Image (tube, rainbow, N blue to C red; front, side, top):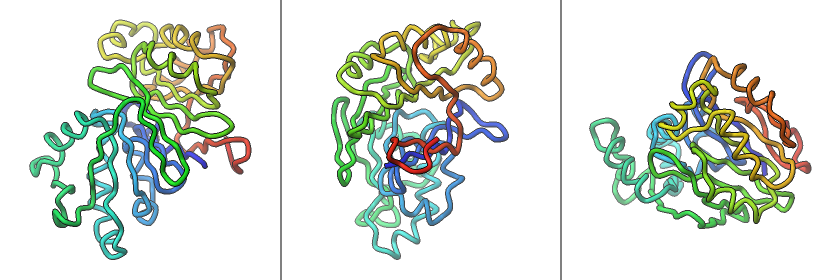
Length: 264
């Protein structure tokens, strides 16, 4: 298994892509602007999309991907792309995006019997098996209902917190896991602590308190930093004392386990 970082920024600018990860060649975790860097053939191979929450920077590529791959998947008689998310997140997508006003309803196109997208509700604590790959739904604490995900592996889990503020429930679950890689957000600088609190994101001081609950040293990757703020946020994190190997996540980075060629 290998995970390719398609986007890891909290917003857009030249060189910045919003959150999306590609697991192997057929599973997306979130669907931000980074999906647009895939070729049409790569998009057409995606069979599953796991969504953390309903905010635009994490979902905006779902509709565009559906429109792009309709003809190829229909010609190949492929099953609908399965969109996995909390039931309330799927309701939000139906009401606010796939409503015929903002975007066509691809859960009923090109026909209700054979749509491009199919919505599949999931719940926190659920573990889905996709051809031997196990993906667990983790708790998150954000301004809208949200989750994170863990991709299990014998050598340790890849964990993505999604957008979240301080989150005791997450660390309780992770205490029972061996975490190989942790992708965690830090959206704001420390001088924007109040804004981080209001928006249910993390700043470096909060990150340090959260990571104190992570058992054992781990490879930690920081995501969702606002464009133009990476150096400041990472400098504030670098000034902290903790046992973890912390670095900023990079668009285009390949993440995997030691037995996976080409890891970064």
